[in-house]
Length: 282
Image (cartoon, rainbow, N blue to C red; front, side, top):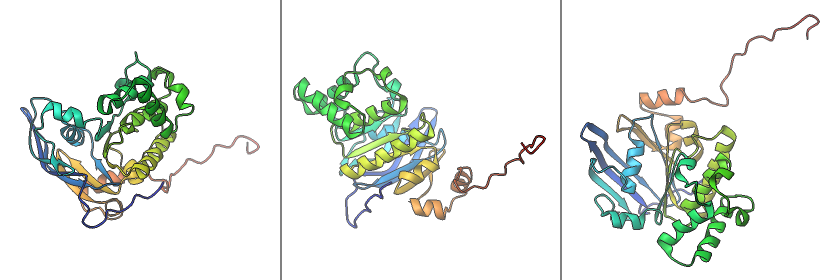
């Protein structure tokens, strides 16, 4: 997988989160989260279920439920996103900031072709004719390596495999050429082989577009393949932060160490039982 370019000194971050706190009537779900993501860089946001990582992404996208109270700052290219109007956030979502969800089958509408859905996402922000938008949809599908993209724009979600549906979701996220991509557990529902293909695709697409990426997952093995920097969350708090190399080679926090210890490694030694030999050694 291609290495991402390092952030140059003095580069302004695409996304800057400072002291983000998210509270519901029953309690605080994110408490003081802070991180930056530069152009062409990936931040891996890691934690088990309930750690607050998905709530962080929803706050960035302006999709938190109305009962949620937020404080702190979320700046995109220097502009504050928290407490923006719904109309303002709708103009930003899907255009400058795009999200790739975990389950493409529930995210895609089964009654419309994938080409129509990608084209409508494009027209919602960029305008243009239906024919021009459909050409953009085919180009986006071709970019994410869907074979015969021009022919498959007329296919429905159920006509694609799970891995190909996720490629459709990535095409939809990319069609407006966003500066920030939020990928929320995009490989969890896929088998290991397809998962590796999607990770390679995301890395290659990012290298081409130089978009910043927030990659959310519970799987440290996945984070190690795609992230430049890592933020580890537990119970809504950040417990450790650093470059991917620092986190994986010399973790400081006991929780991070426990997560790493529970992550399967290719070089792990597995004790296999002795083979049972039948008469004659067969």
